[in-house]
Image (spheres, rainbow, N blue to C red):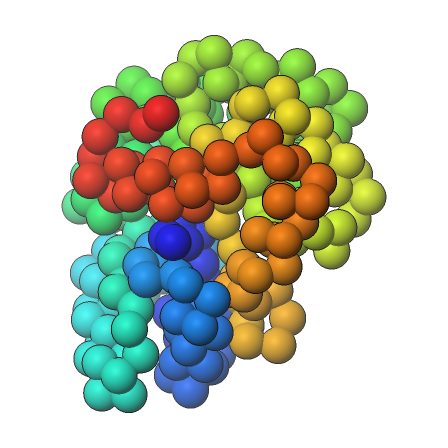
Length: 240
């Protein structure tokens, strides 16, 4: 499997706080069958944590990969980011923009209470730059919870919807749980990812997710959402 959304790099955001934490996260991922992780630190939130920009993220990916190799943890790391889109803040320049493994796919997020009109304007800015938005956890945005047809419109426009494991397991609130299930049943979801932040809470462990999908959504192609589509995104190919 491939985890396309994971805050595994140490000291860059509210995810891993140390190299030891990162290695423990990777070991959990490897144990449940994850072989590739896109490291996606938050961007556009705290400038103090973003010094060095894209170059720092790539350097930190290399450093963590060396540590994983040293401990023989069979996980391959690839660079990426989770960019907060908000009103009044332009997209970073090409040298600072961190897409998923250098592809045209850019993982983006919004404030949970963002207005749909602002979301649409910012998504259009991403597309105008020649990129494909991968919308992180749409099920957590209040406007989508109130009006799930927004997700239909996004999918119709070719935007990729990435749902969080925790939402489908009910650990991120009732609204996210019910909305993620609805989006999955309506076949609007293209990727499921861990959005992991630690090895104790919000972990990369996916065994519980696979069991839940098999029990509650037997018609869902888990391999498509957890391996095939993420792989195509990282290879800069159209998704299924």
